[in-house]
Each structure stands twice: as C-alpha cells, then as structure tokens.
Length: 85
Image (cartoon, rainbow, N blue to C red; front, side, top):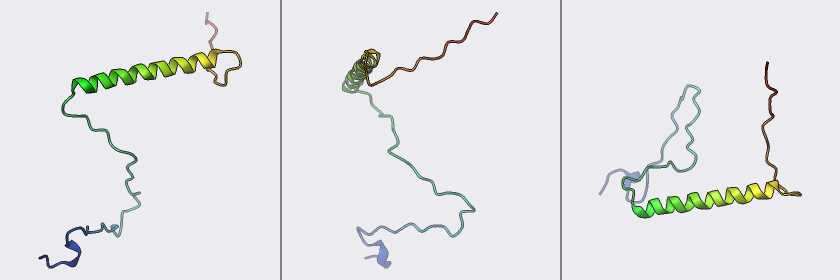
C-alpha cells in the first residue's frame, strides 16, 4: 500500500502550473498528431486509392456545378497579365 494518498490506483496526480513561465504562453496542441504506421498493408493501399478516387469525383462534380449557368458555386480565374514588350 502506498504511503501517499494521491497515488492510489485510479487517481492521477494533477499537473500544477509553474509559478513563472516568463511570459510564455502555454503550449496548445490541436487535434491528433498523425503517426505513420510501421506496416503498410495492401488493404491500406487499396483504401488510399479508393479515397483518392472519391475525392477526384467530388472535385469534378463541384467544378461542373460551378461552371453551369445559374450555378451556386464560382470558379475564380487568375487575372491575365498583358504581355510585356
């Protein structure tokens, strides 16, 4: 049995804020960090190909909707510069 009351099973020790961070903001991590898998299987490659195909199809559908007359989406074209002499 432990002698310290806050180290019993199921009770985590709470991290305390340091008294002085010298003006540094606390580090905030947003989202989960992507970790590359150690093994790449055939199923993972197949899933990647399927997702690429689906994304490509979605992009084509959005582009066709944007180019139609009365479409709610708009494709922004780069302004063409006049040729310099």
